[in-house]
Amino acid sequence: MSDSLYGLMAKFDSPEALLAATRAAREAGYRSMEAYSPFPVEGLDELLDFKPSIQYLVLIAGIVGAITGFALQYYAAVISYPLNIGGRPLNSWPAFIIIMFEMTILFAGIVAVFGTLGLSDFPLPYHPVFNVDDFRQASRDKFFLCIEARDPQFDVTATRAFLESLNPEAVTGVQP
Amino acid sequence: MATQTDYADVPVIAPGHTYASVTDQVTDVILTKKTPKGWLLGFGIAFFFMMLMLYSLTVLFAKGVGIWGLNNTVAWGFAIVNFVWWVGIGHAGTLISAILLLFRQEWRSSINRFAEAMTIFAVANAGLFPIIHTGRPWLAYWLYPYPSMLNLWPQFRSPLVWDVFAITTYVTISLLFWYLGLIPDFATLRDAADNKLVRRIYGILALGWRGAARHWSQYSRASLLLAALATPLVVSVHSVVSFDFAVGSVPGWHTTFLPPYFVSGAIFSGFAMVITLAIPIRKFYHMEDFITDRHLENMAKIMLATGLIVFYAYIMEAFFAWYSGNHYEKFMIYNRMTGPYAPFYWALIFFNGIVPQLLWFKKVRRTTWMLFPIAIGVNIGMWLERFIIVVTSLHREFLPSTWAYYAGTFWDWSLYIGTLGFFATLLFLFLRSMPMINIFEMKELIHHVSHRGKEH
Image (spheres, each protein chain N blue to C red):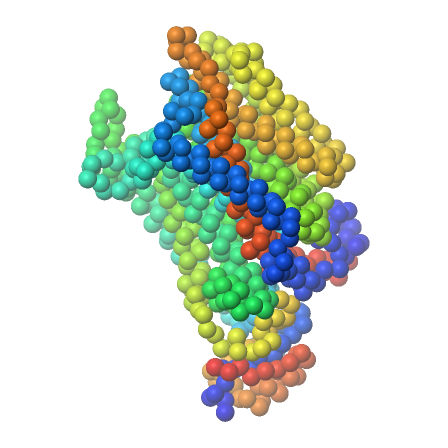
């Protein structure tokens, strides 16, 4: 029975209730779970042991962008088409700074957006949580906690009883 | 909520709103089957002027830039004026979405979405002008570095090439930032829509967003990083635009204070445009609960502050010209104030320098019918400012034998007015199909405001 479910989902009325429920689930030993909310609720990610990692990618992209910007201009001005203007240095790096800067921002910004989407596995047209009828409200005014079946502690009856004890508005099984 | 003593007397969101009521009010505008008559009328007018733009472009491509009022002396005319004006307008959107986010100014939540939209549409217009100004727009790709058969590269030491990179980056980042902000709201629309096709379209745009805490965490971090990247970007863009002028040794252009002068002018004109748009939009869509008088007042304050910087720059421009002792600089400012374009110069001083002083009064900042004409005046004044900068410096060359007079022709004006129509057309389409107010940020705001209420 439990193999056929993706997990169990409890519905709450407020971000505070969701936070309290997530904390309780964590204290009860559940780890494979996810909280869903219509807007970012501070503190949830810590309870789920999640740390955002996008900043490292953005940093690397920024550095790559700066190097690319410089390499592009150096190659064009010094190697590919050296133009001697009154003996001025070919590698006129101060004039290259602006394009290096713009390339830094460009690379970092593109990676910030696509990196975020990629790290979150988007685009993802199908996900089991959408099978829950009420889940449409997750983008409106309701807050959901889903304990997933892959959690070692997961047991349909016990987990359902546990979620019921948190005063949710409803507890639903999530079809895979 | 009504007794927030630590806050200004007008709230950033009218009391009594819930997560659901915000969602409904914003999504109903889009998901209703009835298109408002006013929208159809406005869109129709905007569309007519967009057609005028396309017609002007067709004539331009067929006959060449000779149909404009340009001459050998004044080679930078309306195209450059309009380019700088449109880029400047865009800057308010980025300022609201990036800089105010970094400073945690929560009041920005309700205006950032359409201000960002305004940015993108304004920059789309701005990008058009330098391309057609080149005279052979089908070769515009020459501006970008690519390994070509000609074995040539763009001149990387030229501000004009810096501009290509700055504007390209600006458009790309603005568009991506805007889309990232829209994803959770597209998910809301997907979930709120009853029509199957509408659900599907917004479902595709939402990419499968489901509001998971891990995603929100990553997402919020990315938004913050993008804001931190966009803040120096927006400053760099208009600085680079000013380099187009400042690096040339033309009297009136060749000054070191041009970058800050241009950046503050851009923010000044951008906020004027946001106010110009926000006042009718909130009236028409009954969004007074979200875009309150507090928002208008805050924007008016930013407009006043940047307007003072701009006014200071006008004074300094004259001072530098006198203090430099440079013959040509002195003549430039004298000619500007008394020459053939003097009425335009004094009009811009009036619109940008004198009239905005009324914003010192709280009454003016909070009265829509007073604020609106001031903002319109600033839009006009900032256009005149760019016209004065471009034209007065050029039309009196170093040699009197090359002196000339410049005026826009019918095609100059039709193209400029046409781009206003293009801008309005995009804006109308945006208002009908996308959430004009950031829904999830408004919910966050309600959450925070309700917490503040409890602490008291």
